[in-house]
Length: 350
Image: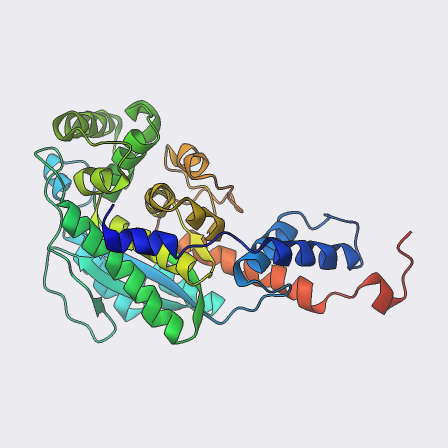
């Protein structure tokens, strides 16, 4: 691990146990049976532990959509051509994608980042942080160098620094990159020591024949690159994507600032897995939004140590599922702030 990354890992601290205990005590004084609000109470206590406050507050909200292309698309692993990545980036910036609709609905801002799109894109709302124009084909060699993977991680960390300074304190992970379920499945296969039959799904909707081909491509890439599963940066560089590395940085950056980061679907969860292997304490700052339809997502969440809030049968990505969790998180805080206690309401507790 590089010296600078080691310092970042050291900056991520465990949750504040005293704040969690105080939040738990407060929840038990509210006019309800103890624990009766289930996951809402769990979220409230987790947020207290992050912030160090019994009743935490949420500032501005952002979904960070990292976009990048994948060289492995040369192998025919996706139902869509690679050009769709750049086209969707412009759609995000124009406000026409599903993530934009749900962001408007939940009062969040969409931060679209070109971290590795294989094209020159210009838009006044686009955050241009390109590390390189797409990854190499992992079936022919490493997707990128370790230095490039680290550079992409730092992009994510620095972006959170920038947004935090502007008052953003609730983050969601989103992504766009044709071929990125292939990279994510490869990361899960290696880091969680799984078989490809359990980790590789249909992504954009490929048929049975192409699914078998996709599995074979990943097996070939793993055999060729021989990633070291004990070294998450090595695995990320050889098998991952620039947007996955960028989201890894977003997760680590949120944890450094003791802010919640809501994890979206399969690709975002692959970034969460990498982040968890780099900095185990970062898991405490993650909130899993939903379990997608993509094969392997349940295994991926378990490998990170997360339990999803929702089961919506979604498989779009972009941050769409994560945004649906924002109102639930805000509801947990409102319960803490606005619900009467037994004493204030004059209700007998026993």
